[in-house]
Length: 326
Image 1: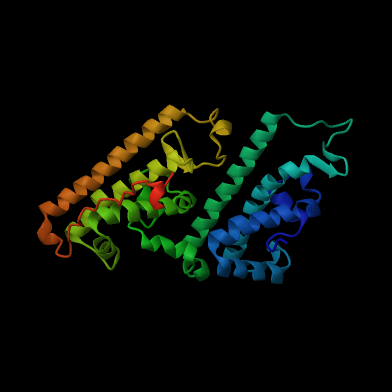
Image 2: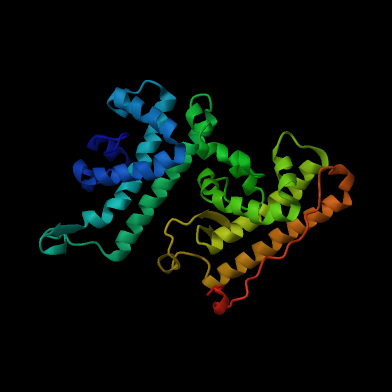
């Protein structure tokens, strides 16, 4: 069950509406949101610190340390809103021996679909805004939250040429969102491994991540590689529906499915494809210019060895020889 929120009074602080009156009914969904969005976001060690602190205090109000109290309140806000989002289908139905029925009586009736959609979007936005608040709070007090700072979830960004949301936003606008940056990190890794490392060489790219770089090497990263990586990452994130563009700012795609979101998106599928093509072309141009920058200043890159282009191995289908790829 949930370890960070246990009472109706605490639920009511973040979702002060009538349907928070039955804690036991929503507790499983609150617990699911806690596992999915808190433990996976901040790491097991930091989560256990929060859990043991809350357990010892009994309620969040009894936590003496103000920074810990604030962090746990952010966690409660996240899991309340996103937990109720997970619970909505179950709350609106009665599941019994006769099957599934809609809850209704003489005083109330089932909400319209558009009202349910607006509620879901509101819960999503409130929950993900609280995620952003939590990450900012943890990063601004590294001495207070060393478990998070040392977690794989946080340290993995050190493996990239772009290490912060602020740096990414300089080249592709995610509004400095740490959560958006974290969400698209796996795509950024693909770009570095499958594109940048093959173009410039794995050892050379790795050398740019080790230690303090300066001069032409720093210029290469800041003016060519980082913009290229950010734009190519943004292009893939858009076409894979991980993020959406609204008013020129990229944000995590909270709804996911194009058919349910297209009415609120300012872009059609064709416009999305155009954005992808443009971002891909611009990002590729930055990387191409980066290669030329190295060749024009080769004396400043003594460790650089131009990779040898390799053709992909192609299999010729022949069922009679046992080689067949559909």
